[in-house]
Image (cartoon, rainbow, N blue to C red):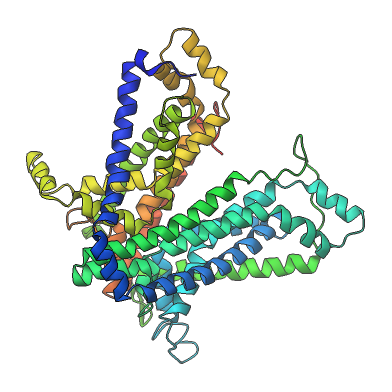
Length: 547
């Protein structure tokens, strides 16, 4: 148990500072967005009816894309966990590729392949069907977000007890009956989490609908258009508030599901018994499905690499490095992405460590509210978060503060802070899970020997939370380096990021430049992830790996 805060003024000051930061950079900006329109503004906006179409489109594409993403994710997960098919390591690697690149890159390559004059639609089939609109958004979101469903479902399937299925087979049940009555129910928690997680990400998606939606406006693109096209902050705030309410409702449902996710199959130790054999025909079908999906993903990223190495894809395929020369000459955005994401990941990990400690080991009033505020950004769409920072901090006092520090503006610092606090929930939950796995008596032993709570936290708990820190750091870095919606309203020419540059190059139809920057962005993310995992293998072996 944590000592009385009154007896530890340093801990009390640190806690008050953490609360102040959460109020300033999570609560305040979001309240500003909700309050901007005012009662009259909301009434006028709702009566105008311009929000109805984007709302219907958002719900429509969320239902469609979530369904197909979860179906593909389930097939992929089932094949990886249950079947003895070949090439599993290959499929695992390909299955996470969409997580390491900006999601809207799939839309950009989709246009190259299947758009007007696309290499597949026109070059192979000799026609140019329109891929812009609902069908295009549906297709690219399915590919971009199915890895989330795959990982969640595979996690649940891999932890289910094979003895139940073996017992059913021994009692005479056929493969289909076992699948219908055992496998599907056991995967229920994973399926539910996958559906709601994908729905949240798809609902909040900005880049894909913006690039390939055409006239198919959804709520995030409507908010962007109102600000960029008309300077209508009131309308954008109202649209974003509608988006927030939808996202919050999905997140509340997901939270309720997570609380009831204890799906106990058999008590005691997990069984090492092999799973019942899967029919050969089903194994082959799963292999074919995984191969087709992996082929489509590799087609996307292969096209990306070819575009970066050819003069003008697809009409001029002569080899060139000029796009990478352009990347080198305009590498500021790539450098900014690395620096901003690295600082945000480090800051997020440190803040999450302390916040998890004071919430999980503390008994102070307001602890549950603080816990809720730390989780809240998980339900806030990136476009809403960015508009909140623009509304709250694009003020005269911010300019005066920049002058005081001798800076032309504070946008770079604002981007780092936004990335840090937008990603807090993931790092915080990783630390929370790690702390729950560590018996309180371990750190209480240190305090009983005279160490302060902070000293016990630093010397005892932090070394044991290496795995949790690694999870939070890597996830924050990858999300920060690939996000567009959070930074789209915050950047300036001095503080532009790689995703902004890629987005602008795609809008200018500079496919080669966009491909080169994407290769650089993805390569940077992969290198950091590999290095951190190598390092994690050394610093986490003595502690608990985050769940």
